[in-house]
Length: 260
Image (cartoon, rainbow, N blue to C red):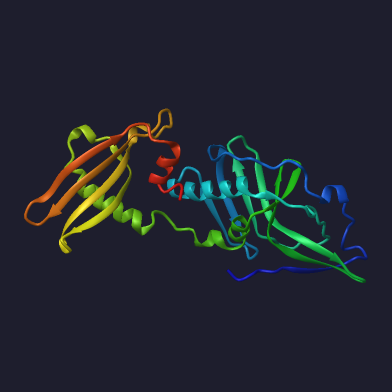
């Protein structure tokens, strides 16, 4: 991504207001957010474009979780958190809405250098201002900074192609399972496909999925792992089924592509 620099020349004679040095420096606390408390994340560009990511959409929830993770993993940075303008410029921002009705805003951070007749302010590479209630902190996060400026525009709409392919293949093989395993339909993945003796028509397939009944979050997910052969002469033959009981939250999120 090309480095985006916003330069603002502000006349000292009235356009730039004095800043309280105490307020301009970073405070000791930092926000800690939980994805389950978020309703939506909305990105707004300088040119008026915007996009809303809703918690109720399974694919957009992945993006929300990623943004919240960047906020929580960011580090505090020292610098100004408040610059006042007579005619405020239009800045890109991210608005996070909570289920309790509160909201927070993320905007680019600035570095300002005094000059003889003007004060020069440039956007701070890799840093943002996070504001909530009556508090503001300055955070350092290259990922969050890049996403705030342009990254959100490139988030996929709906299911990525690889997920659609996994769902299609899993649906084909799912019909060969015994009814005992009917509940294992969530976040299907084809983990590996091996050719048999290099033949493009004969394969060993390793697939997995989670049990749908655990999607309310009351109990940990169980995961099914299936190994099968698919050949023209014998069709689909299930070779092995393994049930992993109560997998960790990290493993379940990876299964559903919520974690790397």
